[in-house]
Length: 281
Image (tube, rainbow, N blue to C red):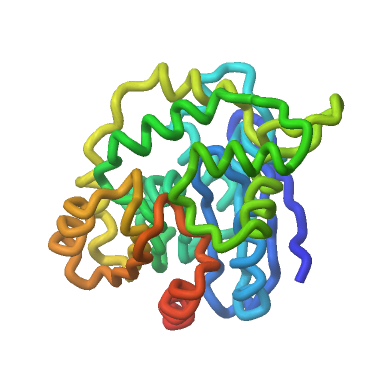
C-alpha cells in the first residue's frame, strides 16, 4: 500500500512532511516517530504490516527528509520538535494515537505523556529510556555533522558499518537498504545526508540531556512496550531494570546481541510488537 504524502505547516509556517497510510477509521492510528537524523521512510516496511488494519502516519522532523530546513539552528532543539509533533497531529486530525518512537521518537513520547497525555493511547519505546548513555550521544554527535559525499552506495555502506557496527541488519541487502534511507543523490551526483547537518551544531549548543525520569513516569497509565537492543549504545541494562521497576506493567522485548537501534523488522520483534499493537483498539 502506497502512502499519501502530506505537507502541513508548523505554527511558525515552516513545512513538515508526513507519510500517511490509510486504515480502519474506528481504530486508533499509529503515529511513528523516528530517531534523530532519520526520515519517515524508515517506517515503510513497518507500516506495510499495519496499514489497512489502522491508519499509520510517519513524520519527518524539521530539517529531516522532505521537511523544511530552518534558518536558525535553534529551531532544531528538542523542545521545538515536540511542538512540531503537536502541530502535525492537529493538522492531520490525530487527536489520539498509539505512538511508536525509535530513540529520539521515544523521547518525544515521554515528553508528550506530560505535555499532552490525552494524545497517547499506547506507546512503543524503541531502544530508549529516561537515561541516555553517553556512548550513544558521542556516536550520534560525531555522525550528525558529517557529509562525506559518497560516490556510491557501497561507499556509504562501508562507512555506516564502521560508525554503527551494532545495527541489527541481517545481510548486505539490508545494509544497502539502510544506506539508501540515510543518504540521497545530490545535484553533484554524490550521496549526501537526508538531514540538515547543522543539526550537529544545535546538539552541541544545547545543555547536557536532562533527567527524563519524571517524563517517563508520565507513561504510568499508558499501555507501553520497551524494545531493548541488548548491546545498545543508548540504553544501558541498569536503566532498563529501573524502567521495569518504575512501571511493572511495561512489556519488555529484548533483542540479544544487537546495538542501537532495531528496525522493528527483526524476526524476533515482529510478533511481540505487532501483537502488542493489535491488542490496542
